[in-house]
Image (tube, rainbow, N blue to C red):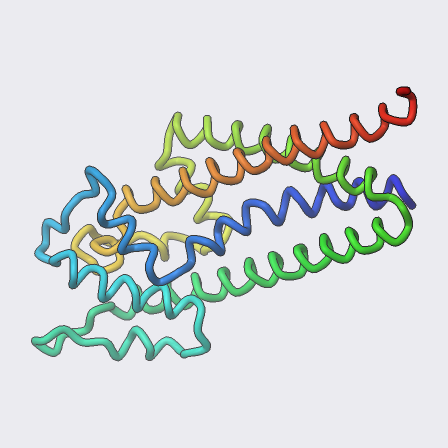
Length: 225
């Protein structure tokens, strides 16, 4: 049972850490930060930064609220034309469903990880719990380094493969002049990947090293003195 708890903690750590960073970026204020990053491209079709931020915020809020597709579908520019086309609204609905599923996995995995910690504390298995998270951190680091190398080699192929896992056909492809691409260009997604992969890899490595070190120290202590 002790070894099972440790192994399960490793699996949960691999899930919780990257999904934590996904959730961290799903805040309406994130585009405001991203648009101000050095070298972030302007919208060649005419959106000002303020306009871009306004519509991008609607998009992220939609992913997290309980509203239906009309939340985006009813948005209009000053001339009365829709901000998002029907295919764009349909894709955002697909994204909303995927985001909901991902966040559910995150909450369940986090709750299980906390519950395991409580069990480990009550049973005196804290070292096994720490070791499990430490191993999970190292496993995650190796996985993310591999994914990062693939992304660096060909970001577009990596990006396409990622979408193929969650969306059917080419429903996620749009023209450069469409609102979704103007709000969230390829640079936006490159930075998102860097934040998630980089933050998760750093966290995994730190947890792997620090928790592994504490377990080693605790194990060695009884033999000293």
